[in-house]
Image (tube, rainbow over all chains, first blue to last red):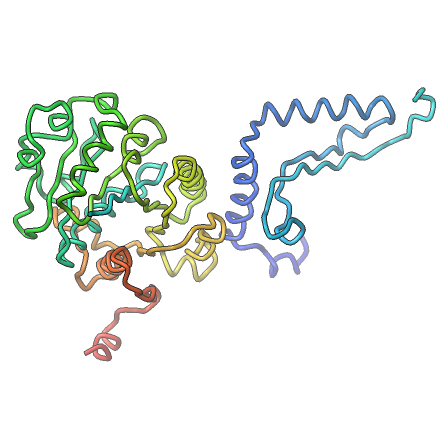
Length: 93
Length: 259
């Protein structure tokens, strides 16, 4: 930990707010952890046909779309960050 | 024609019963005719908070089952002539009443009283469904904690799904000192997350415990919580009342300034 980190440490109320915002997005989308797991494994399965995926670095989440990008309404959005190790050029498309 | 208001929260222990007692009493102090209904069948509490526990003869289930007339079951508070309590049954459970029966009861009471305040049980099951069945508006009580706010969000969703359009938030047990040093969410933080309108912020006040010990709601007295609850009552009646400055220290100096 750097000394500068000490000064910009987040207050616990900010942490509470951030955690709540995240958990409420998935609560409101009524997306259970099991469903998320299914979505995750299906996405991996499909992508694996075309590329070698870095399993460690996968990050798939339901977040909310910013109000500005969505005509003033915030809506749930699926966010996926899937690092690719190698494109699988041999695959027959 | 009266208004039926349900006081609900999802999570238990955030102050629904205390809020119900104070809001009911406060509205009666404002010369409104009020019935408080304890819908927490099996876990009755509103009677002790109001100090009326020794006067119960009939209860909500007796009225629903037709064992007595509504008027016989209503306990008139001797301190405020406009305040009545319909206590919950202690020996039955939530399934003794249906939402249709509750709606019929509140519709009937609306004819004779200005406000019917329903103290809702914790949870989202039968007891909650009974309590919201006849409600015209809802007051959602929460504390500035992640668990309570999360449950409040769920309740707000369920109220919307049940077409209760008028829903306001009470943030209870605020500690201005903790908010100031960033260790507690402020009421602004909470309304930002829940996206509903605030109707009151009540500080964490020792006088609430004393008032409950004595069975005398503190609404309208000099304590910060007493003022906060009275302001909520005024807002319910449609008055515009600015929010209290919870940080105001009530020391000797400010006491003199007030005089």
